[in-house]
Amino acid sequence: MIRRALNTDLTDRWLRRLTAGAAVLMAAWFALRPWLSRAWREPGSPELYLTGVAGALLLLLPVAFVLAKRGGRSRAPRAWFNAHVVCSVLGAVLIVIHSGGFLRRPPALLLLAIVALALLGVWARLRGSRQMSATFSTKQPSFARPDPIARERLRELIARKRALLERLDPAAQEGTFSVTLSHFARQPRLAYAYQRLARAESRLLGTRRAVGAAQAWWRPLHMAIAWIFVLGVLIHVLTVTFFAGYVADGGVITWWHLAQW
Ligand code: HEM
Image (cartoon, rainbow, N blue to C red; front, side, top):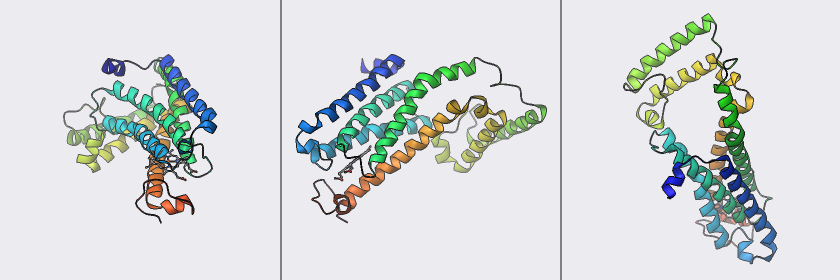
């Protein structure tokens, strides 16, 4: 049953319910906070430490999703996508609890990143996908015919892409091929050269310009914030583990750590 649920499309209604449910849980936790025991109010306690670890693992699952997709290994992209949405939302709830409501120090910026990622993701699913299908059903200006000079350059670019592809992945078709992580691992120089040609092609076609700023930029923005977030989590974990003394700021270190610098 779980497998079937994972493989069906996540409907807009489901997504709205999921995010609304998460918002209610977060608000309820903040409302109940004054009555909770100290261990559930202070981020360094074992309870909130473990909540943070669980939340971070759930939030980092989307990274596995990206690697599976880019690695060309995901046989069930829909299931991966659904798991990415559900795990991110649950992870966000756990991390809000983990923060203990202490939002004045740098790790709170990571919470802002989670909010930005969630807003962009929900926008893309509820509005962006509709705009995208509207784009594909129009002819002008999205897919206007390029002028003759651009057409000549395009022909040249595609010929170079095909020649490169013969060496990079002889069984692939230029029209449907995209570079994956395994190409980068096996033949980094060729994969990078192919990627550059593909970017030049889309610049020439003006695909970004044709679809409007929100549609063109939400994805690069979502990915940039996600990588900054991953880096931030790494720094936070290293700081509390090795610079526990600095984090505790003269107070008692109540969490598991390896050094007290
Ligand atoms: C998505 C990941 C995470 C986010 C956004 C996050 C965010 C936060 C925030 C906002 C605080 C409160 C900061 C303060 O005291 O002012 C905090 C504290 C803390 N976090 Fe995390 N955290 C994350 C993951 C983790 C993980 C995986 C660990 C453990 C390996 C961890 C360990 C701690 C500890 C020990 C504290 C207490 C530090 C103190 O008392 O000041 N966090 N975290």
